[in-house]
Image 1: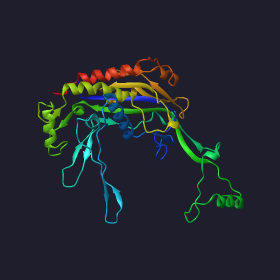
Image 2: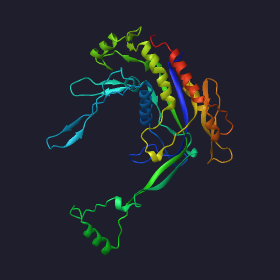
Image 3: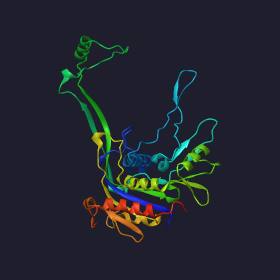
Image 4: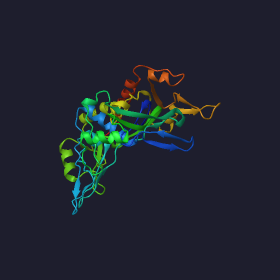
Length: 346
């Protein structure tokens, strides 16, 4: 069996936003001269690892956040520390890096390579802007108003009334929030799973993933050395716990950083799974219309060497497809089958 599994997922986003700290994330597509929304690979990875921990009913690894106070009593951020412990599922699957003064850097690259969730085609998504209000004007007696003068002092009720009268102004209990971007359309993401590294850690101390002390703890805990002695492999019982949880996380993940007003289920329309990276993009793709080059058509097409799972919801967005109610569950079962069939101790 080939040591890689490739997955492509197609989702529909409905009037939502992928990030709320600085507004919608976007990039410019020069071919079709459009600015389009996306969710970063880091955000997708975080969402996958969150769901993985939920599926296992395990806590995520504790991260140490470091700060430093300098001679001027100024507080600054320093590099956070990971525990570098593959006993935590999110560390084993997500990887880690720990750099601290006077100690060799510990670094593990994640066995998952995860793309951004981006438009299936720039012409199959839209961006729009809306103005919002935070409004409590219906009960002004229940919501106080605080006004500061130029000196930073709080004004009295009489001073506020005098100011409003002289300037012919009002003080509504309403906050205006302008130009909030939202996106709608078909979005795709890709994941490559390196089965050779999925449930194992390197024992190499020239570029270490773990300290010798941690490796000894793993050996004592039942981790098995690979035949060439280069890696330690997680026990079979632990792999049996992780495989179905990871399959669910890769298919069912959802963005958890959105606010309530931006919620969209971002329904999974189709999943393609293969050992062949060059074929998987053809199974879920978009074609330009032959009549109009400014129109794209979403396509879901069976291709040799690609397992394709199409949900009933896809019939509302993609013409000519045949879906099934349990397509997403079938995709999970296929991932479980492929990950379970691999010989991790070879």
